[in-house]
Length: 318
Image 1 (spheres, rainbow, N blue to C red):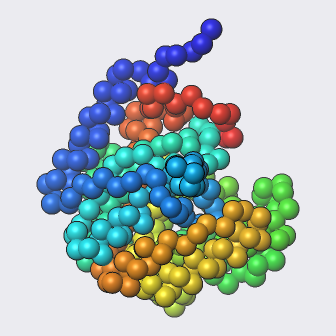
Image 2: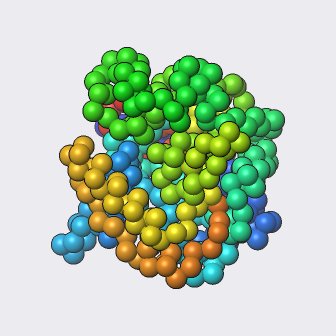
């Protein structure tokens, strides 16, 4: 028999609609403009750890966007002011209890803000939605070293590769520093984070992605990036955004080298984003939050398909 029914209850779908309305009210009260941007583009992201879905449009390859970031930054460079997007995003290979290849993302950018101000607003939004936790703010290096005994900034690559191999049961001897840190954090550190709302910030520079580089209190060079965890589950990822087009192009090129080494598709560079940055991307901070995961936390649901109207797809990887 064909299973045609929704995977979420009607009660859950009503809650979902209410939460999305509350999100819009939150930003309207703060004069942050909602924007609708394309989900199809000529380019995808270059990030080694994100695989974009693609399709053909009139014979040309177009990529389903893993984030609205590039389009939103083009709006910021056009003097849009602070903006947000609430809609669909897509990532290949994302199937599990907390993952689907099609999901709902809330992403917003605050012109003239830094990452500390934005962390405060994330906490305010979650509180308004009913998650009334007192947030804890932890330095990546502190929590990583406390749990693993390794300093993520100074540990030699071979040591990180060995630890990642031991934890995963796979061979990480040829993996990059960023990949090893990501694996160790995901499997060893994140599960031991305190319950409640936790902000982890000042990431290793090799995980800077699209964040500015700065210095922490110990003088380490760090990425001005933060992630948000609720009861050990990652909800959001934010940056004090990189605005230098030359540095951005350099990072795109470095990503291409890594993707080639991993025999992954090399993504075309988004030249329109670089042109927008050259014209003047304002100082800003941005964050992307997984709405489906947020709903799971609000409702105490442990399978993402049960907060989606139709979440049947693929096989679980978790």
